[in-house]
Length: 367
Image (cartoon, rainbow, N blue to C red):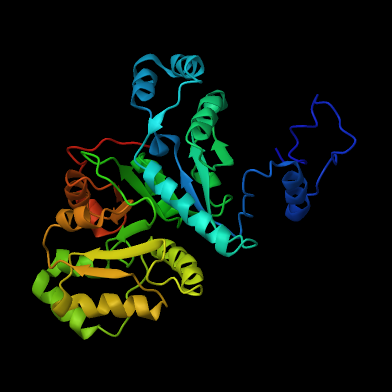
């Protein structure tokens, strides 16, 4: 706990070497004090304003189906008691676990190349669990040797109000309502689902796949399709080919990934960069692909691969890519990805949300 938080001042032993207070805003002073106390065996956490912060809920990171059943059937007190009784029993990995491990692998590369840089991923465990459950979560994190130092446990209250305070760049949960809240607050967010079966995922390269419209881009073009059909859509995209699309809810996350990719490129690692991004879109290349690519170019962004499927199913391509996460605004594509063993995340944004449904094989893995 950082000095000056207010909690150490009440009834705790006083240490003449510990400053009684740090005035609000003196982050550097507090951070230096904490770093001096920290073990040298673990890397230091970056300052929140410098990091790319990924907020992940406890049930996104770990499987807690039995715990959730107890909560629903027996109530909060029995749920907390069960967690306390099993606090030395590690939870099993959840849907977001491979993604988080890949983020940490990228951090290891960055720390070797740029020892003094704080341009790193920082994972925050963001959960509405009560603090009594914290010991089990900490024990599980240590069991898997994960580097997660920041927790936000809100005791039943919504954690959404804390996301901006943590400088969150991406929020992953399975509570669709909370994800919707985050999107409405202007925070990149998605509801993550476990695949129907597990497949091997590359452990040395973070792979992130994005749909285009209503994910990286606005839903402007999808509205044309819904209201006027494909022919009008093709005419519209041709007429506005050189006009960039407005940004979608996850554009800022692609931007953050691109920032880190460039750090590897500067070290001559473009061809073996430990981050790889994919645009996987139902658009057809010849009829409406140019506007998508020109939009990315106008933002100073790119994806390593662009796959234009012209309406074909995305699942088989995703099975080949094997991303750590795939973002799409349509549950139909999320479901297809799940069936092929892909960890998929639904972005509740745009006109497609008028026709929402739950994937038939979904196993929600976060809250």
